[in-house]
Length: 246
Image 1 (tube, rainbow, N blue to C red):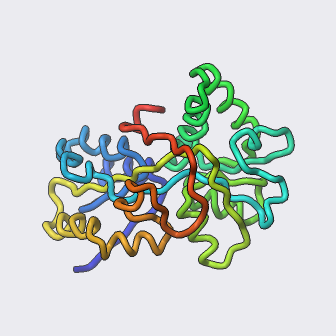
Image 2: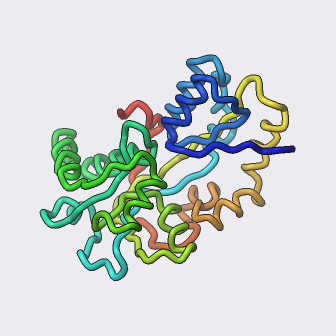
């Protein structure tokens, strides 16, 4: 079997498949990026009806910081200080960006705040944003090139950068958001694509995810962690339909 792969911001990739990019299997950041293909008649409506609800991999939102954390960034309140510059992807194209916004919003609600409080917090957060690259990977590259004091990121992005020898640390805030990344097979896909999706749920495949900083789904359900880092003490429940929060 020969693989032809395409990588990019989740929303951009979803729109490309909708517009005709040939694909057998898709793996996105957000459920809404699969739903777009369901609406276009390219993916079956029951794509998420199985045991795993269509979720193939998981991560959490973390803060990547400069080595030694010189700004002392430990929690969400630290991000809205006057002297902190933030890098986060562009929510117009990136699923990672939307998870970051949901995490910032959700931690306010988890601490007893109102929706108005959450709106005020996220507004303050974006006042400190100095770069909005197109994707999570582009945001990591911008941060590593010297932009900003902190990068809002998937934990696995931070782990991958450290594995590749990049100089950064990362902080898991007390309240964070579990990220659920869906995968789906297209209706007219080669039958091998369905076998591939089934394989991705096996311990062997989940072990490979863990090596890249994406913890086993079974471990995440037990509160365990893959790839290192601190354990969040008060994780915010993952929204069932993240794409509804736009």
